[in-house]
Image 1 (spheres, helix red, strand yellow):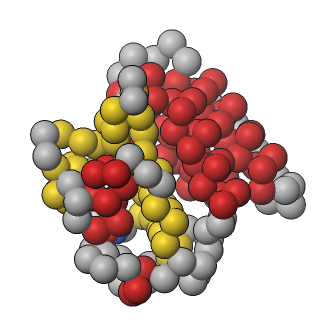
Image 2 (cartoon, rainbow, N blue to C red):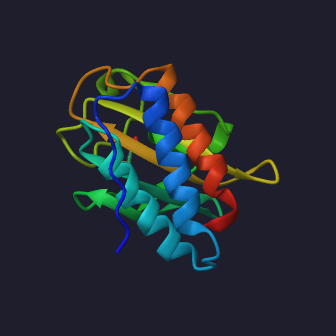
Length: 160
Ligand code: SME
């Protein structure tokens, strides 16, 4: 059993530090990328409040393909350059979207989603995947969330 106990009262930066440490511990020594992405998606779900979806899209050729996640079933394939995830993959830049309805080309997988944060997972400077967080709350994510998720992506990039 793996027991990680996030403290919802702690400051956001500390929560993300704990999340990155827990993720690094979970993937340590495990070579299977699916197992590692599944556990990291579950950890995000456990640590980060006010989400309706959290998970991976993997860059395969010129498409993003759905990976392990928590939440409702989602779009399986997203062309690079499309939607929030495809924009992240094309640019290699984090996408912080306070209002998904105002994002041109946003792909609505779950109608409940109101705001979104997508960070790239980079290996040797190349995008290999993105991590997508959706929230039912408008403007749920800020720069601290973005920094925390970028740090998490860096901590697990070698293991997915
Ligand atoms: N909203 C995303 C699609 C993925 S789902 O939210 C899980 C996008 O616009 O890329």
